[in-house]
Image (cartoon, rainbow, N blue to C red):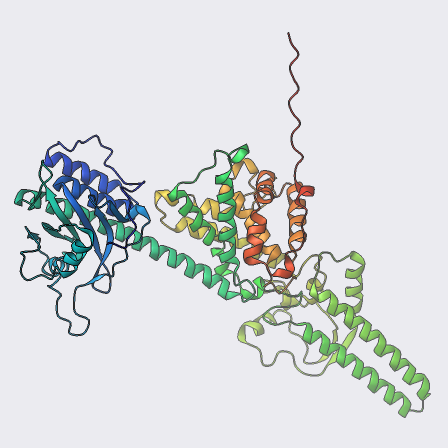
Length: 592
C-alpha cells in the first residue's frame, strides 16, 4: 500500500443518485443500493459502488473488494483507505500493485486459511474480527508491516464472501476499521454484519449478471469474428477485408462524433450504439459465405476453378504444329521449300500475335472496346481438329450437360467457342462471351451472384434474433452497396433513406477495396489514385459528399493509410482539390 498512488477520491466515483440520505433506514438504503446496482452497466463503477456503499453503511475507514479468478485466487479490484487518502482500482485508473491472494497452496493444494479473505472464500462464511492484533489462526504479518510503515492501526475486520445463484464464491468484500459517531475504531456489530451480508448478496447477483452479460457479449464477438474470418479464409486474396472495413468505419464514426460544428455536430453514439456499429461492420459481408470462391477470386476472364486460358493456349500450339506439318507435307510433295517455309513463318508470327492479344484480353481491365471484341470473335472462328471423344472421363453432372447437344466423337472445333453446355450451368462459361467482357473479369451471371451476397447478408441477419439495441445491424450492414442517388443495390435507397452508419460503411468498403493489396484481379492503388476515384464517386452522387469531406478534412484517410497501406502506396496527396470551397459570407442587411 505504501508504494501505491494516492488520491482523495475517484473523479468518477459512482453515487446512488436516488436521494437516499445516510440517515435513511437500512431497508430503504438497501433498496436504493439494489436499484443502483441493477442499473449499473460499467464494471468498474459497479465494483466501486459496492465497496463505497458498504464502507458508508458501516462507517468503515477502509475496504477492499476482491474478485475470484479462474486460477482460484482473489484479485484486488478496488481498494480504499480514507484516513490515508488511498484510492486504487475502479474508476481511479490507479493500478493495484499487490498480487492475487491464492485460495490453495500451489504445491500441496491445501486451503489457505492463513489469509482471512481467502478463508472467508473457502468456507463461504463471514469472518468478523474485532482486533487483528489479537486474532488467532490468521496471518496478519503483512498487515502489521503495512501499519508499521504508515503509522496506521488496522484493527477490526469484516470479510463477507460474495456467493452467486449457484452458491459459488465469486469474490470477497473486506472492510477495515468500523468507526462510531465519535470517530473511534470499533468492532463491526452483528447488526451491521447482517446488513453487509444482505448487500453482499445483492452485489454478488449484480456482478454475476454483469459477468454473464460480458461472457455472452464475448461469445457473440467471437462468433462474429469467426464468421468474418471464415469469409476471409475462403478467399486468400481478401483475407483482411472483413477486418479492415470495421476499422475504417469506426475511424469515420469517431471523427464524426468529434465534430463540434457542421452537419455532424450532433452526431453521437452511446456505448450500445457503438457496439451495434461494431457488429454490423464485422458482419457486413456475411452473405459471401454462400458465394463460390472461384467467382469471388475470378482473376481473369476465363478463370473458373482454374484458368481455362491454358486450354486456349494449347489450341494455339496445335494450330502451329498443324501449320508445321502442312509445310513439311507440302515440301515432301515437291512444292517450293522457300515459299512453304515463308508461309509457315508468317503463320507462326500471326498465331503469336493473336495469342498475345487473347492472353492480354484475358486479364481484363477498365474497358474493352467494340473493335477489340470483334477481333476476339474473328480469332475465335479459326478451326482446329479434335481426334478424341470429348464425352469420356467426365463427372456425371458435366456429362449430363452434354446430353441435350452431344458433340461428335471427333471433328473440327472453333479456337474459342460458346458451347451449349457452357450456358446450362448456373454461370455462363462461354469462352467468347467471357473474353468479350467489357469491364473487369466478371460476366453478368457472376456479377449478379456477387451482388446477391448483400441480399443474403440482409436475409441472414434478419433471421438472427438481435436484441433491441442491435436491431439496426441488418440495416447498417445491408446498406454498404447503396448509392445516395438511388442506383445502388439491393434496395436502391437514396441518401435521405440511409443512416449515417450505413453511409460510413459504404465509403469504408469502397476505400478498402481500392487500396487493398491482396486482390488478384487488380493492383493496389495508391492513396492519391484511391482518393481521386472516391472523389469521382462523390461527384457522381454514389457516396455521401459530407462524409467524403469529413473523410478528408479529419485526416481519417491518412490514419487508415498509415495503419493498413504499404509504404509505396502512400504518395503525396493534395486534398484541397477535392474539397468544397468555403461558403461565402452572408450579405449584410441594408439598414432600414
